[in-house]
Length: 281
Image (cartoon, rainbow, N blue to C red):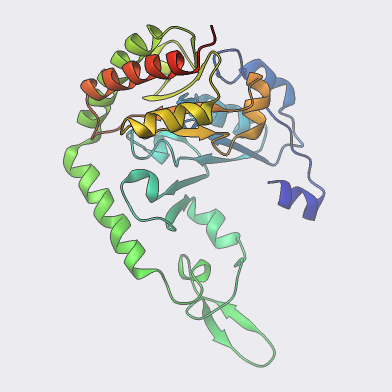
């Protein structure tokens, strides 16, 4: 979005969040106007696990004449996604977040919008006719898929979709909610921990960012790695969020279909060990 703004002169306006990482809809109402062209919102925060009220945002944006793009990378592996029910104009997802290969994803968009959009790059297979003077473009979706496709990646993504569909989103979500409940209970018992994100489990997925008093997130990750526990430490591609939270970074534990409550217990115990290791006095 910043690259587009530099190229076009568009102005980016950011919606604030509250202390639990939820979008402040009153702030969205204040920023939204007839000059708004595009609203971009994450379906689920990859850093906090917050489930954003997409349908409400879509309705408000459309009333102002704006289009809506939803980043569904963190949502598609975990929630049933119905783009018609959401009402959005664009919905993007990533393969590697849903047990698929890296380097591939998908973009859904309303057909009339895709028909009106020009190609963003040129190459083989995206041309209908070509002469020395001009070219015409193939129909959607081919005009957006120039060159040799990542066939292996597409097959891998399809297999991941089939795998998740085989489990069923309802069963998957029910298991994740159980993990989230257990994680909230056990992690809250760790001395000196600060959990970020909504306290209401209905407003979040099983993604927990946290800080541990007196221990840098990267040190937490190192100690946990020695215990055979994999987390991520850093900005999580969300530097402005870290600034808003007032922290240099966070540690993040993400739970999915392959995790168990016993592994959450191991995580909590390892965090106690990390705090003791770095305690002073």
